Length: 147
Image 1 (cartoon, rainbow, N blue to C red):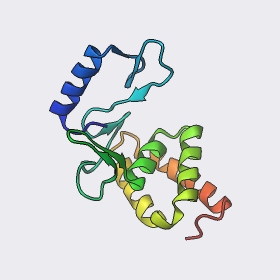
Image 2: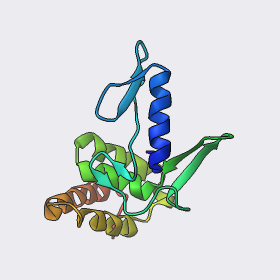
Image 3: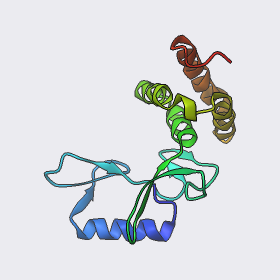
């Protein structure tokens, strides 16, 4: 995700100069390379718009900072909520694994409230809220949440 729109445009221009091509809706790769990486513009991840900028303190986890590049990872709350918004089986499994490995850093009731707030902006919030219900059942089954 590249929240700053000018930086996004500059990055895409640079990638094109380096021979990268758009392979999927958001995925970039060079011919002959096996990796495709997604770049999202602004505060959007697929069809989910984050409520706050991931550049805001606490909204990302720093990974590396070079002289002109900062790479951060979405905080767990936004990462899980955005994946649950899509609602695919793989996304649910990814979220479950993240909760298993980072359980002490994830507040499930706070995550639920954040997810519900994101869902409230969807055209069909009741359908999207059902994703949380399914996920919560998985959490309970795995013994990761008893609230």
